[in-house]
Image (cartoon, rainbow, N blue to C red; front, side):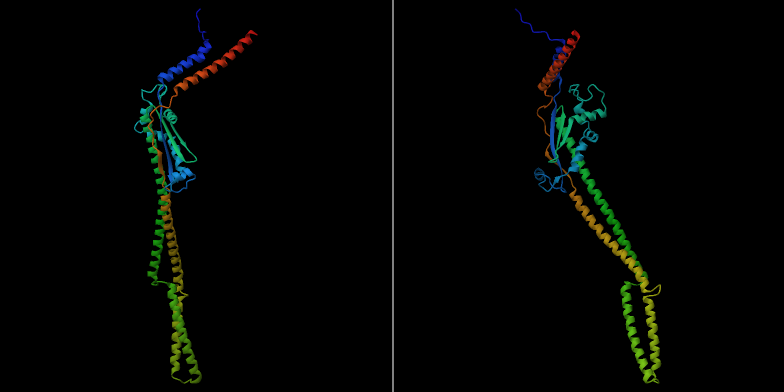
Length: 365
């Protein structure tokens, strides 16, 4: 008596055996090995404090995580610019279009190749994961050769470092440039105000109208004292010795003192060329000069602060672990892939069998 295995149904053959055999053939023979190179790094800046204990360990030198620059690095690594920069000498093209790679795995195997499809393919091979707690960035690069995977990872990491340096340098340069321009403008204003004040002093022949007026007023006060003394003597002589020969001289002296006082008073106030008129113009120029000096001092202080802020805005890429050289492929998971196809086939076969049995019962009924 011979034993025969039951012949599989066409449905079981179609949904289970054929897909499982194709999957076994692909994973066992054709599928290319995928190697993953990993790197970890953090972007640090001295202007921020570490938010966590790990951040404090990472910032032992007084540096802390720079979230803005970290976000910029993440956006850059997932951009077309990163693809173009990393593939400038054909590194990615050689890695992902090599003829040794199975046609279904390499780029441009069956479909026409262009830069848009290559960018989508690149996004499937490069993964960057930021840790919001520690601010550590984890960069993973998949390739079909371990050396190429590490080379691509290293290239992307170098480009990220260059990006952070450019952003940091531009922030420092822009802040200092604005402060330097303000300082130069303030210097020009202070110089122009000082020159205008000196020119006016030369034209007027007066160093300080206020001090000059004060000196002249003191002289006028002295002359007025002399006038009072002479008038007193004149009145006494006219009252007690009207025929004294000194009376004409005293009258002449009174008139002379009055003219001298009137002349000096007109030089202090009242005329266009008086010290009061000169003092008004002098005060305007002096105020402009003092204001320009204060603005210059403030601009120089701002420039000093800008330099200090520029030093605090320096950002650095600190490598926690350099790109690794993988020693074994982590994909594809060959046995897992075959078992997954088998299980899905069995599920599909079971569902289809139930549906077809229901249809037959409906027809027979």
